[in-house]
Structure formats: C-alpha cells, structure tokens
View 1 (cartoon, rainbow, N blue to C red):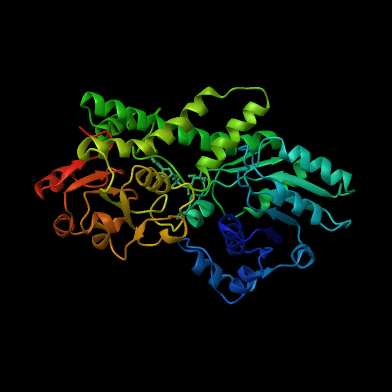
View 2 (tube, protein in one colour):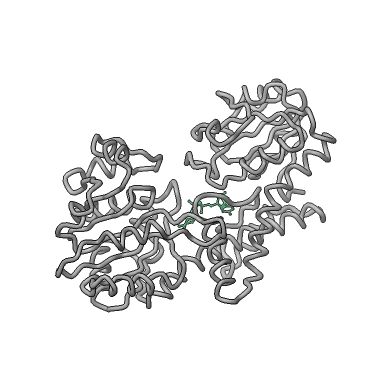
Length: 423
Ligand code: UDX
C-alpha cells in the first residue's frame, strides 16, 4: 500500500521505516527542510537503535519530502505523527495536528487519516467534524496509537504486545489492520474514543507502577527493608508481574510526564478530579528532589559543595533529556549553592544545563567531588573503575539513583553508598 507519514520525529520515522520494511511505499513529510535534506542524504537525525539500518535497507520504498501534495499523492493512508507538546495549561497542543487536517487536499479518493500522535480522548470526534466541514467525507479517521519506547522503538513496532485500531467505519479500520500484515500480535478493534483512551490509560498505569514502587522504596528506607527484594517478591505474583517495578529517582522522557499531565487535565476539563494520577505525578516530582535531602543529611548545607551528576539522559540508550530527572536535580543543587559537574556518554548537557560544568569523562566529572549521584543507568557506569573514581573524589559519597551498583563492592572500596529504598 502507499502511505504518507506526517512528521519525521522519533515516532514518524520509526513508523515510516517499519511500514516500508513491511513492504509498503512510504513518503515521510516534515516541515523542517534541513531535516528532510539530511534524511535524503541518508543521515538519520535521531539516535534510535536499528533505525539507520532499517532506513538504509528500505531506501527504494521510503522517500522524504516537505511537500504535502507529493506526500499525499496516491496515498491510501495518511499517518499523523506530529508533536503534541503540553501547553502552559498542561493540555496537549494540537496545533500541528490541525495543520495536517487543514492541509489535506480535497479529492474524491477514499483515504484514511490515521492518528499516531498521542491526543486527548475526543480528538478523533473533533477531527471528524472538521473533515466534514471541509467537505472531506471521503477521508476516514482511525486512531492507531503507538506503544514504542525510545531505544527499543523499532523492536516495539515490529513485535508489539497488541495493535490498537479505533475507527468510526469498520472499512477504515480494516485498511489499517491490513497495513500491519506481517506483524504477529493481537489486534484490538475499538471505537475511536476507547482507542484514544487505551493509549493514555496504558501510560497512566505504567507511571502509577513507577510511583508506587518509589513510594514503597521510601517506606523501605524508613523501615529497614530492601526494595529490590520487595520488587522481586511482589513481581513473582502473576497478578502483579515483574516489569516497571524499578525504584529510582523518578520517570522522565517525552511521553510519561506529558501524557500523565494531559490525562489529568483531560479528566479535570471533563469535571473529574483524577486523584490517583495527581498523586502519581506529585510523587514523581518529590522523588527527583529527595536526592538533595540525602546529600544534605550526609554533607550538611550544600553551599560550595561539589556534586557530580553521572548520566543526564532520562534513561540509557538515548540522547533525550526531555523532562529528565537530571534537569530538576541540577536546578535544585544549584539553588542550594552547590557546584555541579556532569557527564553523559551521549546526551549533550550544555544545551539545557546552565552553570553546570560538563565533563568529557565520568572520572573528570568526579574530580574533587564531595558526592556523586548516579542519575542514568548507563552500562558505562556499571563498568566504571570505581576504585579510580573514588581516588578522584574529595569525599567518597555515592547516591545510586537507579540501584545499579553493588553496595557491598562500593563499600569495600571505601564508598559511603546510598541507593533508593535499600536497607
Ligand atoms: C514510554 C512507554 O514505555 C511507551 O510505551 C510510550 O509510548 C512512551 O513512553 P519511553 O519514554 O521511551 O517510553 O521510556 P521507558 O523506557 O518506558 O521509561 C520511561 C521512564 O520511566 C524512564 O525515565 C525510566 O527511567 C523510568 N522507569 C521505567 C522507572 O523509573 N522505573 C521502571 O521500573 C521503569
């Protein structure tokens, strides 16, 4: 089939490349000319495992353009994969979505507009009305949310737990279902509003688990239990399961914080106070800040103290620092008057971190430090020569914000080790 994908970001590029790999002809369209030029030259502007190879392998079925007409020409399905960032009020900013809807050329061909971007429940209905207003009754609408995590997006797309398709007309849903032939996964057919809600509810369930285990960790700290053992023990209960029970310094990234806030606001706008989700968000905010309290308990006031942040990306395997706990931590430490140094193997901290000394290596970041905070669980930090690290520091205090290292090994090297929720 011939497909157009609007938006050449993480989601659009992965969607386009994966559909090309399934044998479809795909045109990816973006408004940023430099991005499209780079893609045409074979340069992939984002860091995503396996994406470069996938795009290379499917060159003849994958093209890039800035022109709407060129993208839509002959397309049976038009995917929307544009950004929906939060506005000041916490609602999703749908202006890029509306631009796509308004740019669709008038024609008599039957096409399906498929929504990949995460949007509030009710968006499909509003898009439907707008299409009808424009005289585009020939354009069907389908909600087909993505469940891909950064770093594993290609694998998540090709081997999903499920494919969700919400349509107003069964025939439009059938078209989108056919596109996925070759992917072995259960297909959930739903109405549009339910498909939209599945995406928001899935993310809300995952962040609830993270904030839950983080609160258990905080109670473990107060009572002498070890959250790693606790997570193992509850995770073996089949009704609970083991995933997303890693306690740490909170979730970040481009999806979880934005989507949980969007669902909270969606509920509030509809007259419902989503108390549980409010608490989940609040717990996450506090979790990022608790590290500062831990440092103060050991070091006293932080004014003039040197603190090294190891890892800046919101998780390993990506250069993405959007809503990363490192940003809040750096800001809080700064406000306390600490001198902050930082290192990350991929993320460029100099863009988003003002007043932080960015080091070329983890060891350099640790030079003269009074404490180190392990912020992102990069494998490079597991493999670090911690004995050498200790000798670079003025004081061997380590807060392991991801419970990645072995406390006994670190203590044997003379470190004072603090994890999250560890006995
Ligand atoms: C997430 C969802 O997994 C994906 O389905 C959705 O489409 C977009 O949001 P992503 O943001 O790439 O994907 O990252 P993910 O690997 O899910 O991790 C998100 C955050 O949660 C990270 O900051 C991570 O450190 C944190 N996390 C995750 C925990 O703190 N504990 C856990 O047990 C799991």
